Length: 251
Image 1 (tube, rainbow, N blue to C red):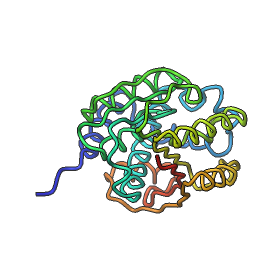
Image 2 (image 1 turned 135 degrees about the horizontal axis):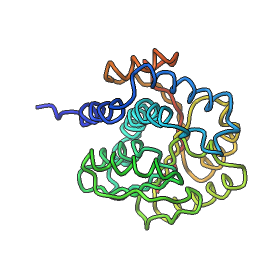
Image 3 (image 1 turned 90 degrees about the horizontal axis):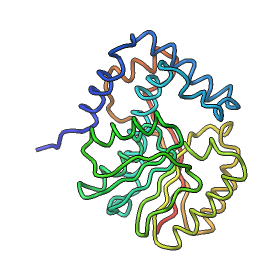
């Protein structure tokens, strides 16, 4: 008998949670504004523009959160069994916690997750995400670059996080990742394919390969709720195909 997909009831609960006070049209407009910040006005990301207002927060939770979950789940599955035997996951710059939850769920019911984000609303939303999926763990407020790393072996995730960092913190984080992998932890970095938002990617990819890691580019078409695809389409985004690229440093 096929195991029910936990994402389906999660997404239904997510819609109930965020559409209780906002209409679909309001969220669609907010998603358009949010995507503009990501692509055209990235200088505003540092001042909290991503989570500025209830509409943008709901748009992030209802669109980017689910899309990150689906993409990271597919990536972890594609990486093979070695990525799914971990018992501790650290999600740096967790947002609403969906990416880390996706990895933890693939590791089985004994996996524990720690989620860290500097934004208070994101931390609260990540706590709700972990509870909704029935995951053992916690979400706390903190800095992705300086957050304590778990003792190896563990999984360390930075999904759509590194692109938001300034050059020096990004350099520090790469050094920490290489050291964590040498100590026995598995590091997974997931980012958009767009080179416009990740000009630092070639240098990171070179450093990861030199440390024994791998670089991949992904395109998936997993099943997704109709309402999720509709929200993306209504906002002018293509939700039919999940794309991204990853760097893996094996422990």
